[in-house]
Image (tube, rainbow, N blue to C red; front, top):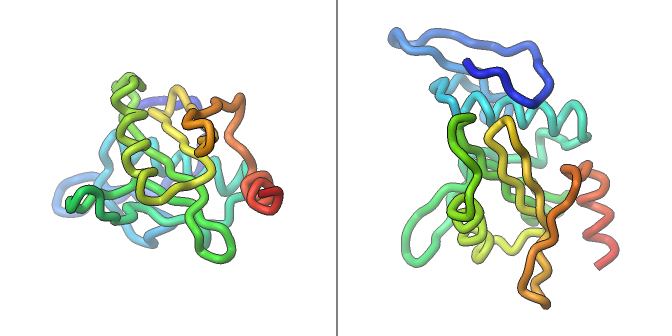
Length: 156
């Protein structure tokens, strides 16, 4: 697979029906090893090990209804009341992060109304904080720690 701009970790890879799979710590099972899944698993490891996100406060492939169509957010981070606080969208390392990628996550946010939006292709990572009053997003220099996500909630 591709080298990423994320910390390495003890990856669990297996084969199922002749195809490679990777262990998803959040779903607690092996899933198809695609380039996007490679990014997801590395990013989740980064969040849990380096940014203090509890795995119990994160979920992959979160289903939502948007314009009468079922969509899935790649990862959603929740606070301790199980309110969504962050949406994360992953792309394969070969996919450029464009306005269209942000439009996708912004559409999901019409439903969830979170505090942070993150997009990563494993090489580049972007995080923004929506301002619902001004109708704009402020891009941050770093991905916030989980405690920063929670403290931002308490300051509201």
